[in-house]
Length: 107
Length: 126
Image 1: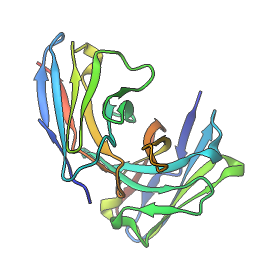
Image 2: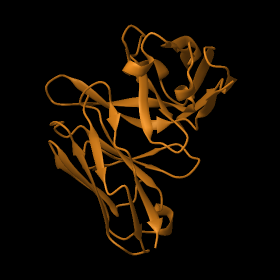
Image 3: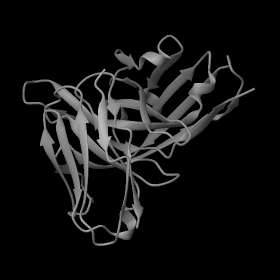
């Protein structure tokens, strides 16, 4: 199975900050990497697919980059509604696997 | 608007069975792979199983193989997860989601999960 490791596991940031979350795959997955946002008690929502493509309706302050084993999710100017947990997920091989999550909290 | 609604959750004793359903609307249900993902209390997301468009191909995470069965009824726009021999570690919120396809450019398709239901909660406890 491909292991997905996110860092950090949590971070504290202020509104307006630039936030970067990284995701590393245990083997190459090309660009088969997707990012989800989850708020407490809610279902996950797709943010970015295939490493760098913004899902419809997602604000442009979110962006993704990377390929092969190393990926990044960036929020350029953190907004109050962005405080949530973020997960990366690979769809390169079965079982599809998720990172452990990165919780973005208010500083 | 594409909508997925899960049902069938509840409290069940260890060793018991439960059948989850996911009703779909606003999409051509039979055109998509569908999947179940679960989240144990306070934990991260875990993919559980998926099924292709006509139900002929099914895949499972190792921890549920032989105990869970995914199925679908395209005439009813519904996805199912039959869960047998339930264990305490199966306690979780179970989400159904649509697998949206994209091509790698080599004729092979991959998928991301673009629409999710709100989830249904399973508690396995005596």
